[in-house]
Length: 78
Length: 174
Image 1: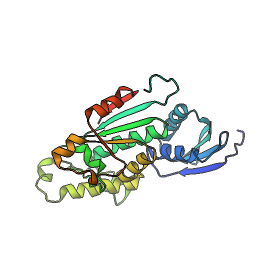
Image 2 (image 1 turned 60 degrees about the vertical axis):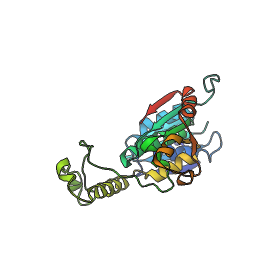
Image 3 (image 1 turned 45 degrees about the vertical axis):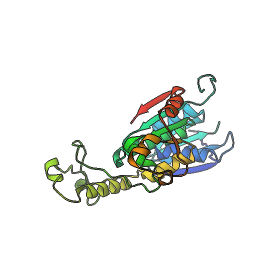
Image 4 (image 1 turned 90 degrees about the horizontal axis):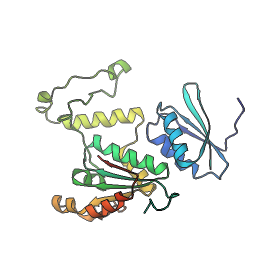
């Protein structure tokens, strides 16, 4: 897997719905178009929610993986 | 009108009609999630739901009338916490302070699990420019004053909400 270099990291570990999505959207506003946010979550509902959030906002979900039982997302600001 | 412009954001219109702690969550969760997705959101707080706009939130939860509510203890080992305590309504209705206990148990369990408080979710909605519309008629019926509510709340009636909801993609009654 290619290495994706993030511009910002957001750790949402321990937070449940809707906070991972809400915090991700808030953090995305700090980024410039084309920049990448790495978001880490433990909420089992976050993979489908981040996919839906990505479709709704147009921000691109570059990668969604599980590392050490945490969900890791790379999101590119549109 | 959101329908006229295909590039306009989606719109969510909610009615929040219940003011207990358990029913306070759905409108604020949906409103903040929709706001985070870039949607326009408006919530009409009516009847008991109007109390959720008060400056000082005091939402409680009662196991009475919620027979399916799991009773869990927010402390002790994991297996202890997973026990679903059988609490018959007949028993609960006779114990003074049971509602206060159930409320604090629910708040503690939610906190332990990583659920935001109702206050935090409401603050998030304010930050996301969610329209929070308090029902004028309910104010009059229950004797609430404008000063009882957070300053970001606007006051309106059925027509105010319906006009907003008419242009919405999703409308839900909670």
